[in-house]
Each structure stands twice: as structure tokens, then as C-alpha cells.
Image (cartoon, rainbow, N blue to C red; front, side):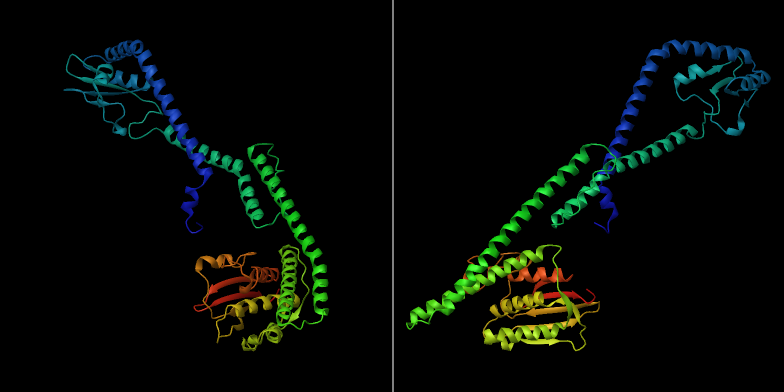
Length: 437
């Protein structure tokens, strides 16, 4: 749309309104003038025509037969008329410089403005005054056209002023759609209470209600998650303090219960962290950080719990700058990316981590597995909360759909970008971080 200005004009409500008003004005003017002209002609022609014919007869008699050029010239100078005489003896034109073609346009003009003398001369009368021109439209038409164009420009300017609040309403709706409710739509512009002002106030009210609903949902989720942490911690501690059962089946149940408690703990921690990071005013504890060293530490830590993680390779450029990062949040991002990649890696393969500096002032972190990837239609949804490609949401597949969502929030909180693509084979998650955060 930005590369085709004519499309913007085509979809411009202001322009369409001005064109509609212009066409309506022209149609009204045409109908009015046509009606007045027809009414005038029908009402006055029968009364005026005999008077005009009698007056032309008197002018022709004044010129005489044969025509007297001196008298004709005196009449042309005294009256707003032009006279053309043609015949066997006298040929004369009161306005030869104009090169007008004297002659009746139709039979009605011939009977009204043309007279034949007894000696065979033909006298043609025409109106002649500054506004009457035979070689083109009179100047008044050009003045009228200029005035019409000026009025059209003024109408467009006025309509533009009237519809200007729509731009603010549109911008406000886009802000509210992204979750930014801090800046309401401006309504105090001195316009008074018109429909557009009422619309802006209604949109502000809707946005305020949405903000309260989201804040209430966030507060409820934080409260429930926070209250669940303590009993879960006590339950896990009590389970770990219990003596290990002698029976193999009981030991398996004991281990399964500990894993479930750990999963619930991680879920609550992810919920709390996601709500904190979704706040646009989330505070980060930034400090100069070596991202490559942090990635290798995350791989080593994961390898202690999952031996398969030891095969993960970290490839980093040798001249990487230090980044101002929140180490705790970045460790959470790396753990989630590595866990997700390791979970979807087929046997005999291991994910790879690459860290490089692009041509601009950015550092690119990419974690890739070599699994089956996902359908292209699902890529835009992978970083949404609680979204998983598999509809079964089985525990064996791991996670509840918060891992990549948390990674996106961490990247955006650092002013970076989050992107997912099919690497064929496998899935690649790319985090782009600014160097000067």
C-alpha cells in the first residue's frame, strides 16, 4: 500500500466524500440552470421576441436602403451591437479585426437578427459587449471553473479536518490491540461532542474495561500460582524425606510422584515468570554477560540431569562483545530452548547452538534440532502461551506449551526479536539481541 499512492487515494474516505459533494453540487447546478433556462424560455420568449424583432426592424430602417455605412458605424459605436453588411454594392463589418463569421446559426436567428433590404443587401446584427466572445468561451467561464476548483479544495480541507480524529482512533486501536493501554485516544481537541468524539470515548472505555479484565486475570493467576508454591514445596520435601520403599513398584510410584511434583513446580515457576515478563514495565537485572559462556554453562548444567545433553555443540564467534543481559532470565531462555530441542531430536542426533554477530549491531543466537519440524501453518502459533502442535497434550511429550512463549517474552524484554523456522531437517529458533541494549 505504501508503494502505491493511488491505492491510498482510492480508499480515502475524505476524497470520496469530496467527490460525492462535488458531483452532487454539479448535478444540482445543472438541473437548476436547465430548469430556470427552460422556464425562462417558455415564459418570456413569446413576449420578448416580438419586441426584439421590432427593434431590429427599426435598426435596419435607420441604416436605410441602400445601407448607409456612416449610420451603421454610428449605431455600432452607440449600441452594444456588431453589424455586418454584405451585398452587391456595400460590404462592411463593424468589427473586422475579430474575424467573426457573421451569419444566422438557425432559422430562428435568421428571422430575428437578419434583415434583407430592398436593393439586395443583407444586414446581420449581433450583440457585442466585453463579455461576449465569438472565438472562445467567455472569461467568466474560466473564473467560474477556478472558483469551483477552489471550493473543491476548501471542501477537501474541511472534510480532512472533520475526519482527522479517525487517525487518532485508528492509532489508538492498534495500540490497544498490542496490549498498550497507557495512552488513551485524545478527545479534548475543542471539536465539541460530535459522533467521532463519542466514538473515541467509547473506544477508550472499551480499552479501559479490557485493561481491567486483563489485570484481574493476571492478578488471579499470580495469586493462585504464588499460593500453590508453598504447599508444593512442602509436599516435595516430605516425599524426599520419606524412606525409600523396598518394593520395586512402590519405588517407581515414589519416583513418579516426585517427577510430577517437580513438573508442577516448574509449571508454576513458568506461569509466574511469564506474567512478570508480559508486563511492559518488567524490571531486568542487567549486567555485562558473555553469551557464549552462558550457553556452555547451560549445556553443562543440563548434561548433569540429562546425559544426552552432553552431545550438544556450542559454536560461537571468537570476537563476540559482552551484552547487557539479565543472566537469570537468559538462563531460563537457554534451558527452555535446549530442553525443547533435545526433546524433539531423534536418536543419534544432538541439537546445535550457534552464536554469531550479524552485519548490524546485533548478536544472533540460534538453537536447532534435527527432528521432523512442524507444519508451516503452525509456525506462527508456536510461541503462543499453552499452544502445542500435538492436541493430546500428553505428559510424555513434555511441557504444557509455555517454553517457547517464555523465550519470546525474555527476548522481547531485552529489546530483541524472536523467530522460528523449519530448518529442513529440524526446527531452528533464532534470538536476535541488540549489542547496545
